[in-house]
Image (cartoon, rainbow, N blue to C red; front, top):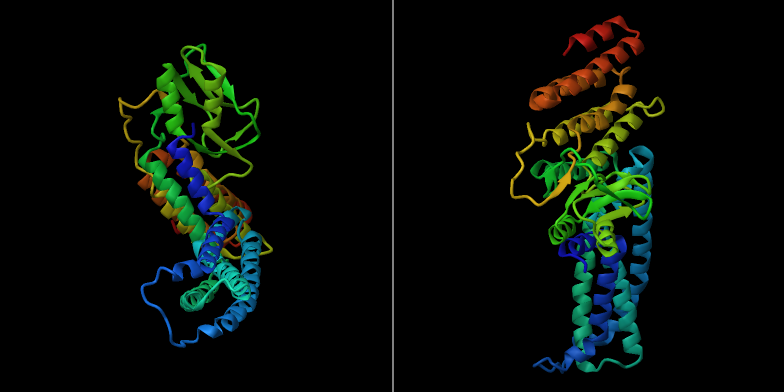
Length: 410
């Protein structure tokens, strides 16, 4: 039986897909256009005058031809934005661009208007509508025109920034910040902090190769309590798993094959990492954007500085210390992603590529010093990264005055 949490995750994942919203609106358009004649029979008022209902076929023909062109244009603009984000920022940002609600709503509305017009024209030609039905169809068409105009205006305004570098950085920062805030609230995902593995633990491995993108903790907790076992999770979201990489280990009595399959199914394994439950992916993507901006072919230190600021805001969401575990938590143990690894994920490419840029090196050194004060338990990592950057600056920077300003300005 699929748990409620998994159904909610699958529904949320499907809702971000571009086809899902378009399919829903298209089905709704078919329903409204197809049942206009049936709906008209239930109206208490009978329309006898001429309010232009005979012209609805002409209006629908205009909508059908224009919406097809607008839908094609919208698809072209979206693909162009995806390509721009991939080339200028990072391919990891593409999944965030695809799940953009404004672009999905625009494309879905235009496609839905096209479908509505086509179904309406077919109904008119097949004499599906009577006099009342034509009036209902006309009113629905007027409402549709208003919706299309409002959506088109929003879409035009949205295109001014969609896919630009600042937009991509903001999207990645928002995704990273959301995952980081969830991690800060509950570092162990509803389980207990990892402990030393007792002897005799049984290993459970994945049945496919890919990245863990989601762990259904409700299923793991239910299985642990039902069978009286302790579960030690080994693969967190973002971990590449295969037949030699354990998903989890079981301590206690042996479980049957059905329970073991249920444990494996609690781990969603996909080909690509996702931002939702993987705070490190957002930091890696931000670091990739900065590293590409600092490449000699691009040479855009301003973008790198924007990314450093975004990293600072994201990492500042981490608590100064891990919250104490609750003694009443279920016997499901999870490791905690290392804060030191998170900081390195974001800054390592910037330290490697930005040593020759005076303004970038200065900003990174200041941010690392501020992070060391905000997160005292990560002070050793921030200090080590700062020393690594200083060594790179001394090796790369040739101008003595710039070198003195960079290393002396912190």
